[in-house]
Each structure stands twice: as structure tokens, then as C-alpha cells.
Length: 162
Image (cartoon, rainbow, N blue to C red; front, side, top):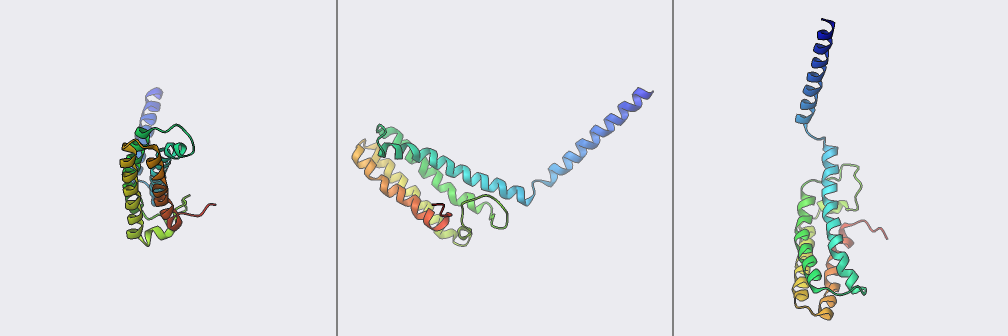
């Protein structure tokens, strides 16, 4: 019987732990955890933007020109640009201590912020259409407009880390 008593105690402990885990799972993440996740999701979009603009900038700096890569990456940038305002609208994280380069004014001017993201998407599509033509000079000449769209948003809505 002593063995059976231990088994009952172990079973009760396991059930208690499972019950406690299920209760905490039902409660969901704290607002702080939600803010961290929202920030990480935003930053993931920006990392993908950087991954896609990188090869294009490389071509402008002397890497071999590849019109197909320039077009593909610019089309990806256009899609990602539409996600930027969505990710910020998902949660206002100003009240939380999250690491971000986003300025609080983003949530005060959501229409302007969304317009700048739309301008980036449009500039990326224009760049992609030019790249589809295969002309290196014309394509890389359009990079200034694409980069300018990024910079317009950074000037207003991103911490100046320079």
C-alpha cells in the first residue's frame, strides 16, 4: 500500500499541475507580453523589408545586376509595405517598455503613417515594373524614388539613430 499511496500523490500532483497550466493558458498573455509580441511582429516585417532591399542596394553599389531579382524583391517590398500600418494598428505599445525605434507619433497620425506606407508600396511596384524591362540604368535610376519612400517615413516615424 505505501507504493499505491505514492502513486496517488504523484497522480494528484500531475493533475494539479495540469489544472494550473490550463488555467494560466486560459488567462492568455499579459498586456506586456502582447506588447512584446506586437513589437516583434512589426520588427519582423522591417527585417523582411531589409532582406529584400539589400540585394537591390547591392546592385546599385556594383554587385552584378539581376533584373529578375530586382523585380521580385521590389514586388515583395510592395506587399510588405501594406503590412506596416496593419502591424502598428494591431496594438498601441506606447505604454509598455518595449525596445523599438518607432516613435510614439505613429499612433497619433495613423492616416499619414498609412499614406507613407502606401507610397512605399507604390514606389516599389513602379520600381518592379521598371526592373521587369531589364534595363539596368533605368532600374537602378529608380532606386532613388524607392529609397526616398523609405526615408520619408523614417524621417517622421522612426528614432533618428544616426
